Amino acid sequence: MGLSRLPVVLLVSAALLLAPEVRPTGRSASSPAPPGLERAVVGRVLDGDTVDVVAGRSRERVRLIGVDAPEPGQPFAAEAARFVRGSVAGRSVWLEEDVQSHDRFARRLAYVWTVRPTRRDAAEVRRTMLNARLLLEGYAVLLTVPPNVRYVDLFRAFQREAREAGRGVWARAERTACDPAYPDVCIPPPPPDLDCPDIPYRRFRVLPPDPHRLDGDHDGIGCER
Image (cartoon, rainbow, N blue to C red):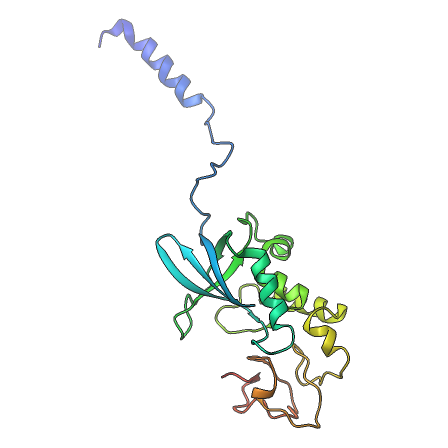
């Protein structure tokens, strides 16, 4: 390089270094999922907490984390399934996993977002996460299964709101007394004496004196199986 060109090269290099960085201002509709999320399309709705999806090239059965909807034949089972069907059947959703990705039945465990989330704060969870909507509408009850407890505090608050408003399963529960030994669900005090097959709840908190003896191993969790 000739010495006469050196000042020009130095000026151009300095201009490039000082120029402001150009950043993208928008996100393409075909951009990849945010971290920790996977897009899927919901096919069959089995019940209020289980759906079949197509994610990529895979067909999977998804069990919603943190909620337990009534089983077929129980009160509000049909309403819960209808709510899920109307919310996500045939539509794209976003799956978010927690610590444990699958249960012992090989079902994928996920939080199901009806809209791709951006903040994942309390307001967005309340508005666009199917798991949360089921609790808020009273179509499911809280089911806490560690280690998948990322949103458990929000879920507990949403269930409390539904219970106080008498929505869904809580409309029926409000007509009976709820024993304080089971603070996250509504189980009437004895008599009669109830066993786990007699109630729709699984893995709920149990406090002394546990009048129905639902916590057989005394670890503070009732009806674990």
